Amino acid sequence: MESRRNTIASQFVFVAGLMLGMAALVQGTYALWRVVVDMNQGQLPGDFIRSIAAVWVFSSMGMLLLAVWSFFISSQLAMGFRQAFFQGIALGVSLLFFGLGAFLLLYPQGWQYFLFLVDGSLILCGVLFFFRTTPA
Image (cartoon, rainbow, N blue to C red):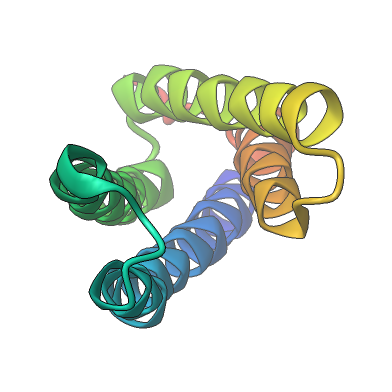
């Protein structure tokens, strides 16, 4: 029974990681391409161009690293490791608070920030409701 619950927790975290990975790929390809097009059309001022491109690439890499981290956590959750539980809590709370802050306070019309809220909720639900440690 505990093994099945851990598998469910692992699947929740894995799905959240897939969503983060897909968001990173979209931001790193299409969205960055749109920024470059706007730069070439002169819609963004001088030094700001390089700064925004660097931030855009860095944030895409950060999201991709969070996705990879969630894949590692999901495999450890399936095995019942307690460290994965704490890492899942940290990752889920971080994404949840970022999603809440960005979506509700800063950019209420930006639906993409709602996905961070969903990712954090998925991770927290999986870890808090389904994970059980394996007896030592």
